Length: 310
Image (cartoon, rainbow, N blue to C red; front, top):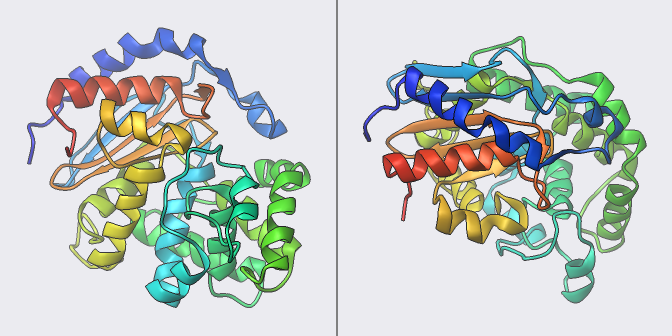
């Protein structure tokens, strides 16, 4: 294991990056997210020895948004197997924005390039087993409860409703996927699952434990019980490296070099084999949709403590 970062050090670095919050902008295309306070900042590191250190407004909850794509992918792989999933979703990174429809029109068959862009994530959500949206979301929540050993985690219904009502572009992506037989069933039901998946509320302590579980090759930190297969955990972490930070993933890999996934609520989850999980929350986003503070803090920690996997 790499040397531990202490709580005092984490608090010091979080204070140092606080001014960067003013360099970004809170997401406003989902109305409920526009109400977030850009000064609410927090970070947590969950080590593989079950020690968790944290700093900032650690009890402040935020919705997973695109970080949920990693968790949903793990569940879809467990439900369907690797061959089924990747017959419908590709494995290649893209330089296009996460909500782009452009590449779907370029390729035949018209399957999304990877599970971390919206088109791919919508297809993955469609693959989660369940007879109706409530059952699918319930299974996803149960999976997260198992990963965190915390049954208090639930869906932020206000954000889910706001996201569902304003999801015109995601509806367009779903109808395109439906036309080309990438998804099955109802477009509206799949969108319901996806928006609730994205609207699951967590804090940085809970999120860092999820990151640590992936870092622990899919095993629970406390009990050692296997929750995700080592192979599926590796697949998820690989996508975090190649596609996890939207179309800034290449630059992020060079500058920071850790498997990470961001969400437009301002959360970032990182997962480092042999080290643990890191979670940062800072709702002010850069032009790519990544947390300004989260990216800067991870850059400092990676460079200062040699966390890059490369």
